[in-house]
Length: 71
Image (cartoon, rainbow, N blue to C red):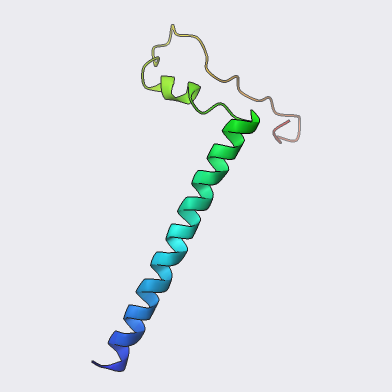
């Protein structure tokens, strides 16, 4: 094996481990925000089912101030 192949393998393993850590961190973040009541992600599941113009709004839009920043 050449040295380049070894470094490619090491880089692949490091990238895989980092991506798995980020994925599990994101999943934990979603889970903890749902449990604390900060966000209700289940209601966003209705976006695919209730997408008609006549359906009720799932989330109100946040207003913007005169500088264009979200309140």
